[in-house]
Figure 1: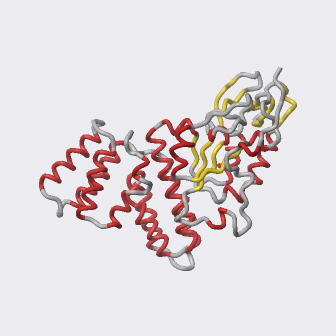
Figure 2: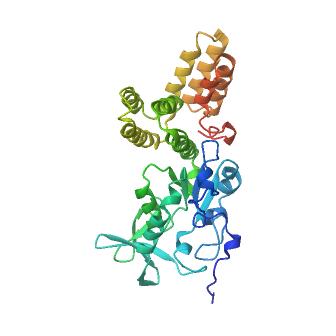
Figure 3: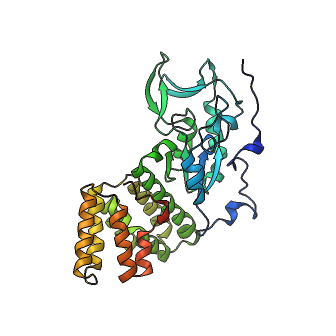
Length: 345
């Protein structure tokens, strides 16, 4: 029979729970636009042995690849509220319209309130994050993938984990995903694009809010926003055009809410190809006939699914470097190119 054991905190990855935010020496106090974006993450994904069975679900992509570009702060909600390792499993249930998290072997043990209180207590720290990667299928951390059991104790549908749900409700603009979703190239690229945009907003725009800062952000991400939703791009452009000093705070809130909502859905090949043509039109007067023909052909190959996005984008980047400006190039590089995010989409 397995015996319960406590988690050795010295073996855990840097924790959101122990991360100070209220003194000048804390990472949060020193964080700025030049800092690597800070992401919250379920502790088991970083290799911490905090799961119910004493193991982990280490994500090699998060721990070895993304860790070169982001700082991580991990949390295991179940351990944080005092559950042991190993421990009996818990599950999400719905009874009389109420969703609860209970022990699978003892319905009287209800952990719902503790998980929600934990999320509430972490608000000052989550406030400094630029994104969150949760563990899929977890009753505490799942994002739309946690099994929801009915009154007959049968899995009826899927829902959000209670901790993840509380975090998302408190921070609706925060980019979130599950580790399993990062296996999808389109979702992966879109999530990281959102993270870098949100990081730019939090530590670039909001650090020194002004009409110039708002307009600069809009210019920086306008091409990507157009690709996701051209109607919203036009709407936000008009909103900024009417911005005054007295309406600056209100306009900034409206802007980022609509911007982040528009950026949530990955872009189709058809839309991406259509907006790549904009670069062809922009550069056309400077390109020689062979360059024009080659770029047009690669964009069409991408639209047809023959080549991934990285192929036409590599040529666009080359031509912008040759004929454009550093400012033009920045529009094409919202995240580090060597992350290889465009290789699979």
